[in-house]
Length: 482
Image 1 (cartoon, rainbow, N blue to C red):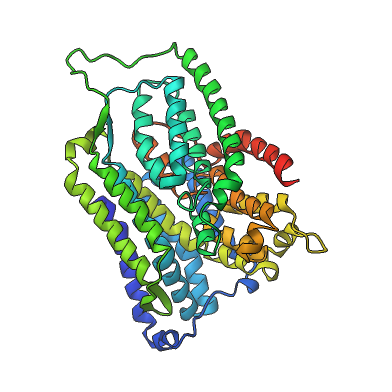
Image 2 (cartoon, rainbow, N blue to C red):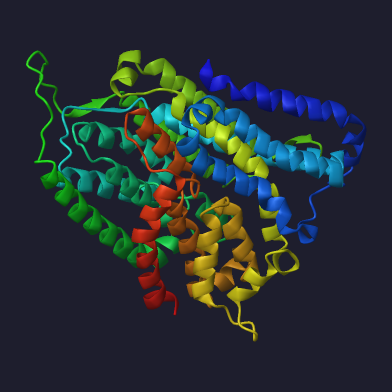
C-alpha cells in the first residue's frame, strides 16, 4: 500500500479546491483562465522552490531519521508554501488554476510514465553472472548510452541500472558507476532523437524534423560520451585494482545460471510504452475533459490510461520471484512521487517568471542570449538553457529559449542551426548536473540507495558533475559555440 500513500493527498486536495472554487467554474468554462502573472513576480516567489531543493540537499545529512520518515510531508509543505500565498495574493481562481494545471498536465503524466517504466523495466532480469570489471561496466554504460535515444533516457536507465548494481554488488567502490550511469544513460545518451528526452520531443511537436538532432548532435554526443566512457574506464580500473581486483563470492550450493533474460515479455511492454509516448505526440484528438479551464486532451488521457495498463500487464505476467531476484521494491517510485509533488508545485512561479522573458525578473538573463543588434550568442544559449534545465523542468526551459530564438522551426533548423544545437544540447546534456535535472536521475539514485549504495548528497553529486562535466562542456563550447 505504500506506493499509494501520495494519491489521497492529491485527490483530496483537488476535491477540496474544486469544492471551494465551484462558483468560479463558470468563469473558467467561458475560457477566461486566471493565471499567475509571471511578469509581476519578484524573486521572492522562488523561495519555496529554493527551500525545497535545500531540504533535499541538507536534511538527509543533518536530520536523516526525521527526513526518512517525513520527507513526503516536507514536500507537501513547500508546495503549500507557494500555493497558500498565491491564494492570498492572487485569489482562489489563480491558485486553483495553477494547481490543477501543474497536476493534471505535468505531474500526473510525469508520474504515470515513470511508474510504467519503473514497473515494466523492473520485471526484466538479466540472468547469469556479470562480474563488474572495468570492461563490463564500461560496456553496460556504452549500451545504455546507445539505447537512451531510442527508448528514452528513463526507459534505458530503468532497464540497465539493476544489472549494473548486481554486477558490482561485490565491489567496495560503486558510487562512481552510478554517477557516470546518470551522466551517460539518464541524460547525454538521449540527445539524438525526440524519443530520447522530453525537450527534444517538444521540439519535434513544434516542427523540428525527427532526425534533425541525430544528424546535428551526433558528433558532439559521440565525443562527449566517448570522453566520459574513457574517464570512467580509467577511474574504475584504478579503483578495481585498489580493491584487489575482487571477484564475486562463490556459492558452493548454488547452481550455475546461464546468461539470459527472465521476464523477457516485459521488453514487449517496454516497446509498447515507447510507441504510446511517440503516438501521443503524433495525433490530436482534441480536448476530452476540461477542469477549471485546464484542457486534458484525448490522446494524452488515453496514453496515460494505456501506460497504466502496460504496468498492470507487467505485474500480471511477471513472477514475484523474478522481481525479488531483481531487487525490486516500490520504495524508489514512492520517494520520487512524493518529492516531485513538492518540486512541481513550488517551481510554478520560477517557470512563470522564465516564460515572461524580457518582462520578467530574469530579463537580464534572457537578454544575454542576443547581442544589441539581435544576433544570437550561441554559447549563452547553451549555458543558460543548461543551467536552468539543471534545476527546473528542462522541457519548458527548452521551449522558452526555442521561442526566444524566434520559434520558427524551419529557420532554426537552417539559418540558425547552431543556435538550435545549443538549446537542444544545453537542455539534454546539462540535465546531468543535478539529481533533479532530468526525470530518471533521482529514480536511479533511489534504486541505488535501496540496494545498499550510499549515494552522494545533492551537493555531493554536484561536486561530481561540476568536476567532470563542466570542463567537458567548456571544451564543447569552445569548439562548437564560439
